[in-house]
Image (spheres, rainbow over the protein chains, first blue to last red):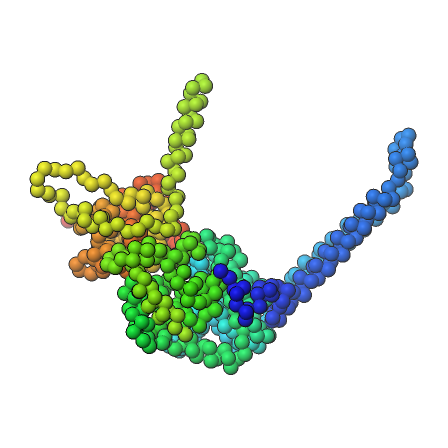
Length: 343
Length: 180
C-alpha cells in the first residue's frame, strides 16, 4: 500500500520540513528551530518558576490570624510581573519580525533562468506540464515532478476544480492553488533525492491521499528524463501489447486518459504516455508495479473511495463481453502488459 | 396538547427522513442491467389492449443529488457541452426545453446515449460505464426540471458565473420595433 517496500526510497525524511534540501526550505527550517528554542526556553523557565512557587510558598501560619499584604512587597512584585509581561511581548514581536523576514527572503529569491513548470491541481491528483516555447516539446506527466539540482524552478500553480495547496516541505513552503487564479512558487533543490509532498488544503474525499513526489536529480540526468517525456509512447512490441492498446482505445480508458502517439487524448485524467516510468500510482499512494496497477484498474473505488476513476470490478467479475461487460480477464492482462511497458 | 406535540415531532421526523436518500453516495455501482433497452418503447402506440406503463427503472439515480451532480461533471468531461452547450443547444438539440425527440424517460435518454442517434449523436455504449450513463440521464432530465426538486442541487459545485441550471429562465420573445 505504500512506498515502505521500496528500498530506494528513504521514507523517514522524505517529507519533513526539518530535512531541508534547498535555500528556501533552509530558511524555514532555521526559523522553525528559532521558535522551537525560544518556546522550549520559555517552557523551562515557567516550569522552574512553578516549582519554586510550590516549594517556597509561605506557610499557612504566616498568614494567620489575618491576611494583610504589605504595600511595599506588592509594588515590587508588580514590577516583576510587569517586566516579565513586557519581555514576553518583546519576544513575540521579535518572532513576528523573524516570520516577516523569512517570508521576505522566500519572496526575494530570484527566478532568473528558471525552469517553468505548470502544476494543476485536480480532485485528487497533480497534473505536471513542462512548458516549452515549441508546443511539440512540451511534456506532460502526473504526480511526479522531476527537477534539476541547483537550478531554480518556477512553478505556476493552477486549479481545475477546488482550492488545493501545494506543499513539499523539504523544498519550500505552502502555496494555495485557487481556481481561476495563477500563483507562482519558486524553489531550488541543492541536493539530489526523492521528496514527498501533498495537498495541504482540504479538497474532498481523497484529500489525505493527494500526494506527489519531487525527484531532484543531476542536470544531465534531468535533461535525459525530460527528453524521454517529450517522446510519444512506445509502439506495442508484441501481440499481447497490441491487444492491450486496442483495449485501451476501444473501452472507457481513452475518454479520460491521454497516451501521446495514439488517438487517446482525454484531458480529465492523468497522462499515461510514460506511466511505467513513474514511481507511484494514484497520486503517490501506491508503488507502481503490475499488481498494484491491476488492483487500481479493477477496483479503484475500494482503494480510494470517491475518486473519479470508475470501478471495473463488476465487469471483470462478470467476465462478459459485449456492451455491458467492459473488461474481461484476458483484456485486463493485455492491458496490463501494454500499460506496464509504457516507459 | 401532548398529542399535538407528538404529532408535530412525528411530522418533523418524517420530513427529515425524506432527505435520507438524497445525498447517498454509492462508489461501487451495481452491475449494469441489459433489461433497460428491451423494455424501451419509442412510441406510445401499441397493438392490443393498453398495458400499464413500466415502472421507472433506476429511479435511485433520478432522486439522488450526488448522481445528478456527478452527471453534471460528466456532461462537461465527456464534452456533451460541445454540441448541446449547457442545455441551450447549438449543434445538437437543446436539452432544457420540454421537447424530446427520442423520449424523456430515463430509459429513453440512457438508450440515446448508449446507441447514438442519427445526425451526429455518438454512441457511447461500451465507452463509458453504465452507471455513468444513468447519472448523465439524471442530469439531462434535471435540465428541464423532470427530476424531483429536492434532489437537484441548489447550486453548482463548480465556480462559475452561470446561474445554476434549475434557476435558468427560458428566454421568451420580446417585442422590438413598432408594429406595422
